[in-house]
Amino acid sequence: MMPLSEAIDARHSVRRYLNEPLTAAQAAALQAAVERINREAGLHVQLVLNEPRGFSTGLAYGTFKGVGNYLVMAGRKAPDLNERVGYYGEQLVLLAWQLGLGSCWAGLTYRSVKDAYRLEPGEKVVCMIALGHPDDERRRPRRKRAEQVSNVSDLTPAWFRQGVEAAIKAPTAVHQQKFYLEYLDAGQGLPRVRARRLFSLVGYTQTDLGIVKLHFEIGAGRENFAWAD
Ligand SMILES: Cc1cc2nc3c(=O)[nH]c(=O)nc-3n(C[C@H](O)[C@H](O)[C@H](O)COP(=O)(O)O)c2cc1C
Image 1 (cartoon, protein in one colour):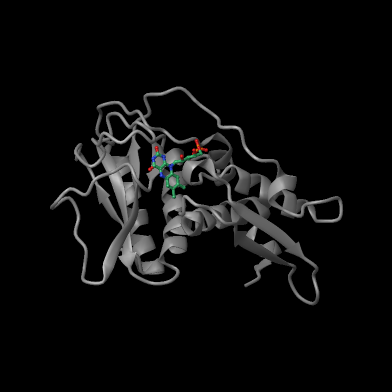
Image 2 (tube, helix red, strand yellow):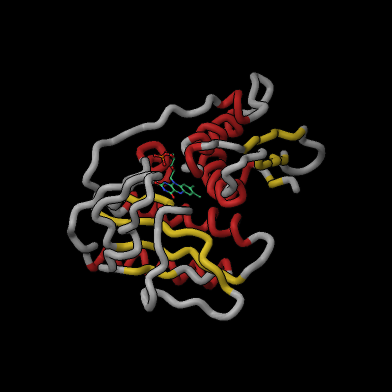
């Protein structure tokens, strides 16, 4: 399988899909990851296969076509639920890319299909992730520069820049990229990095932040730093 850093470089949101089911191997790999994540993160993510109604909405934002599979990103209501959904959902997005599948986060453009998934009392759906065999051209949105989203400079270590570069490639709702990564002076112990979300009228910045933090960790190397509160 391609390394995660390569998946980060190559990934883009896919909104048009071929009318072809996932292979048994692709579905099994995703299902195993979903189960690991639900155990590890206390989420209730569900992989829904061969269900075409969830993404057949008429909404204008991001016109989806041919979505037959998706992930329901659900969990028990909690102050950090949205960020956890971002951090762990993006692991599934990158795994999908490694498996040769396209995906797209969806905060708005889906509908809830009865019996396709189930929620326990106290749980809610944060968003969904469409999945499938891509049927579109590569399209790379214009992205912010490292200096616009962080305090990267000649004085910060190379791993910090690599983390920021990976973070810039993270999907964010309406491509808002409302986050800031700050290298904090190392006192004793590991250098610390603070990840903040910025104000947005659109929302979803908490989920975006979870996604961004995962990308930063992969780019920077988890062993090089600790997250500051
Ligand atoms: C939390 C979240 C919600 C999103 N919601 C939608 C959506 O409802 N419809 C849609 O078409 N795209 C949605 N997107 C995809 C973004 O528009 C896309 O990631 C962004 O434009 C950057 O493009 P890229 O993923 O190709 O890098 C969402 C992304 C995130 C992270």
